[in-house]
Image 1 (tube, rainbow, N blue to C red):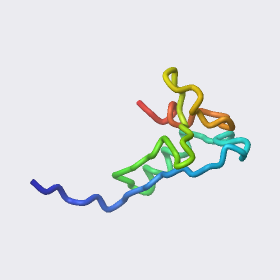
Image 2: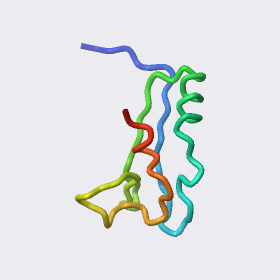
Image 3: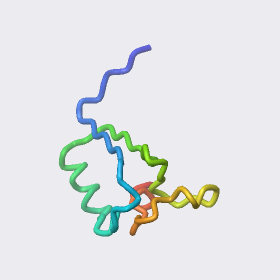
Length: 80
């Protein structure tokens, strides 16, 4: 069974060094959602763990892997 390929795709992939401060400090989930809606995006691929091994969400299982400079949990805001 073949499904048609989505045409408006966004690929979010993070490769942010643990030494860069303020990750997500000014992230606005409402504004981000409005831009996606205006652009008529119908598919988003979002990696929550980078090639440095850092994760960009809260984790009770692996708190040592949470990016040390993350100011705001962007993924937590954007999920519902």
